Length: 409
Image (cartoon, rainbow, N blue to C red):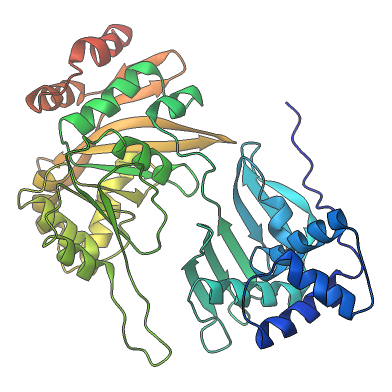
């Protein structure tokens, strides 16, 4: 399959001038950028265009005023990330992997775009606060860094929401896992087993977590806590809590740890921490140790075996030593679902169990590992099967784990 061209259509020469007119007009007459406004400004400027040309020009102006400006044309189907480097070069990630786009932003153009997008997301971005992380009204996750933290121009990272929310069947069709592993994932949800989705950046952690949460019975109440709204869960009873950064005076911040404590008073059936990245891991572990089964979250980790070290580092930020963390995790989190990426292909590589080792510290043991010919059983496969059976999962070892045992033999 040939990759589509990333060359944006050329902008008409009058676009820059028209953008200035529209911005000035919006200051005097706030409202939306629509065809009547653009047509009026064109007439005042001594130009008259046909209906089709006016409509096309209005769309381009709207992209620059409310959208991604010169990057808007790159946000096509299958695109997951648009990245602007400090030299102005633009890269696009998606179903064809990471590729350079045939568009480049000048320093002033990149900075103006970054500041505008930050403002649209309710964040401050200037020389005093040279970075911003925001959720745009369009659903795009935005991050930017300005000089002097950037050695060149502005660095912009955009994470685009999926056009269609995938379920487990959809991910299976895309090759993220096979039918046997899909059965295990469903069993984890039905057994209310607390789990972590782990992997590197861009491996699809949030996508898999959202797909699994679609399997949660509609009678259960899900509360999602995130730093920036990203986890799109297709469920009839889901609530989202989002942290808040401090204002320009340094006041008003609400962190993830506070939100986890608040959600405990909101009658949750499942607590979901979008991404564990700091001291909030302590509150999550305490919540999962007080009768809130089936909780889950995501953690950045290179391998499933690295997860204990990663959790220990996060626990240290929350004042937990290695022994205390192992005691908390061993009864609060059980399963690790580790994702990997090979080029454009994202897939579940391993399922592991978290438990305390003989030294009393946290360790991770492989239960199932995915290979080209199916699942291969690891040392913890029997323990995983018992746990799923104990949770009255609909999937028993016979369809999911036993085939792996036969191949491993």
